[in-house]
Length: 382
Image 1 (spheres, rainbow, N blue to C red):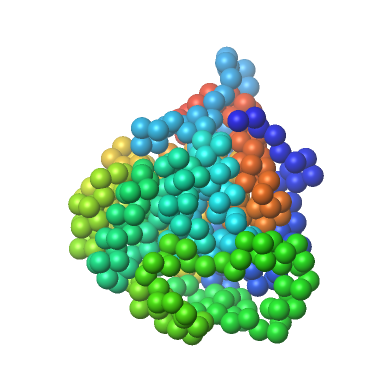
Image 2: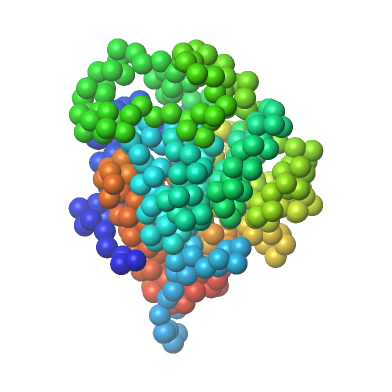
């Protein structure tokens, strides 16, 4: 697909600024914020940007290619779209916009269990190429049914999440009524009235719902009952005993997301998992934790030849993708960057953001004299 982006928004920061103006405050703060005092949220990007890369200007160079192989599939860039919950709250129809854009650009799109479109619809839009992230249900029956749906939808990769043993403490969401059970306060209603484009698009596509969970939810739940249902339905804490039956059941590639220690990486290898995403949930779970680049560097060096090591959290640009890959990541994922794009530009946001990131990364590679994404580690200044 041709790489062309809107020159009015030549950075993710520009998209973030535009998104803040276009969507209600409660939706923007849900997207933009971390947990507690946002310490780890800010640390993720700042410490990633301490990584420096070395160019080789006089070396012979035949050009740079963004193409990257992962699990035997060649993608057109070494980054994909990370799973994000409640996407339709931030911009109506946004998971479908992003799934289509990812398919057109040949990059991975990961659908969250708790987002606002279904496994089946994401698969339809991507011709069976969308990945699926599973929040672990408390009941084996529910777990098995969701996994069977993902298999029937031909999802090539199942991602299981290990960094949500409890929901993060997020003061903004609590103030805005987006904790469970949610509520629509007078303040939130006024915010909606101040964003007419968002309000009209929401009317057009309807109130966002947990589409993947509809088959399992009793009809007619009020907001308080919905909160109780969610609390009772999901148990985020994973362990070996919960992972083993998933590994036995799932015939495709299995990825563990939320790895932040060598211990968890070792356990993943022992359990026969195919890949790990080193991640701290975008700084939304443990404010006192490390930035993602710190464990990524040690885990990739120690285990990168035994399991596919990927990274998300803190990546905001093409140079950030380069920094992560030079530090040992085989692939990268971003969540907020793409949601800023869709929230800012609507149906054009997915294509714009992917094109922008491709353009930035291509420029970095040409500058470094880096011909393939496998060569990034050769340019790391240690």
